[in-house]
Image 1: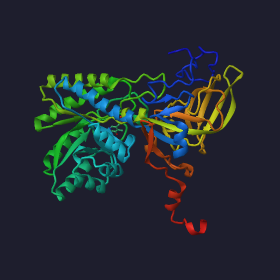
Image 2: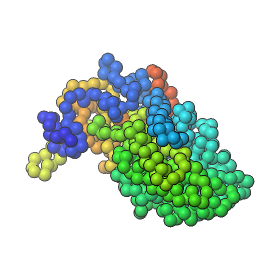
Image 3: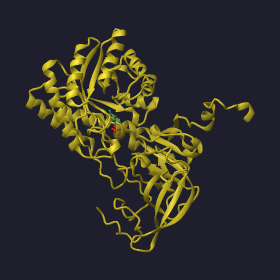
Image 4: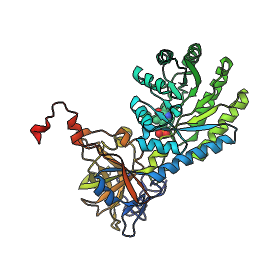
Length: 478
Ligand SMILES: *Cc1c(COP(=O)(O)O)cnc(C)c1O
């Protein structure tokens, strides 16, 4: 770790993870920004060849911008990385994009064109996938509390897998499939007891949380599934959590699932093992995210080893990356409204200045800092500046002091009202988790590519929200 006081501009308020403001505050670090992000000769941010100012003029502020080429390339790259690692051990591998990260009809089609299937976690996500024309056999349905209506829709549509997360659900799916005269492939979601190193709300494989079945319960589940003529045991599933940067947890989960599979093989086939998603990405220039090649090779090694040790046949392997594909492709653009300096008392006496930079969105378009304490970074988007670095906190316009977009970063100290700010790596779990808190608009989603921009999902405005209010009387208010 670098010494945070290494620069004369370093603030005593800066957290230790924040790099000191050396060098160029206008730089777009390649590990964080989408691959087509660059600056025009006059210093403006270009995404997919389109100027930030043009995007906000045409589509309004704030705005979610998806770098289409970047997202497609990441999907293809992920598929290739896993295919190569698993080809080396003689296994077939398939990727399902975890659509809850960021889904629209076009995005679903990009994933299909890159060769990926799709995972959905609700009836709503399933409708988007079906509207996109995704082959139902390549869709998996997740969820710890699927409704009977969701199950019926999934079985009717002919989904390739339903991932079972309770014993009750086995009966429900079995009944629906029997009624419809279908045999529904199901997987059992296991809680492999892996303590993934991530925020506790993002860890899904420790004991005291709602997801998955323990190996004991899963034994009962497998036996019951095998009893029912309307169900087929497709395999085992594990997703240890999200935003994980270390390979160890994935390898440990793979080992546990493969050993459990070897046991279940005594009672019949278990053709597939799904090892979930959760691969971390860089949100800050100082973040060092593992490459998917390295992770894939590590996991493949573990699968091959257990297969050999247990004398099992090689299963088909599935992964479900979401964030790793969508996250780096997205950038949120904001307009600065106000700035305010506060004087923060220091422990050893004295005080330091923090500049609050308020933008026209906030926790309604990116809840992750408030929900998980996630850190992001920001850059001026409409211009470059050589002004001295100032420690800033980028905040939104909501009625909460926790309404923070970027907890700590350095920006040029001349940042001012009407400047445009860009926050990178917001493609995953931002728009998809957006709310209308304070009746703010849900910003539009725009795809940029080769110098042109088009709307994927339009802005949802106060007119849309009032139209849903049964007491709204447009004639009286026009
Ligand atoms: C959320 C989720 C994923 C994707 O997680 P990422 O961190 O976005 O890769 C995959 N599988 C399941 C079951 C999930 O719930």
